[in-house]
Image: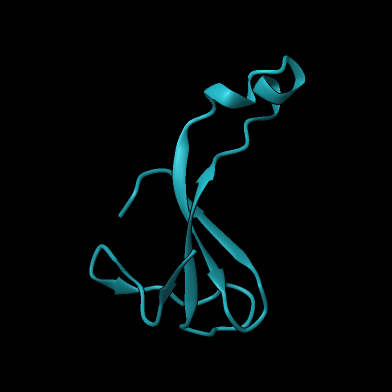
Length: 66
């Protein structure tokens, strides 16, 4: 887990959708696709990046690494 203070995506500061905090932890993640999970294909799910709010824990997922 990588500590991040302020996250900027496409020149816009990321704020938590739940609590409006601006401090996050960055983690790599597999993006959940329900149809793949039902057939045991989780290992082939696309990877992305997630920012977890340090204040409330809300997870913001993005498809491509920014």
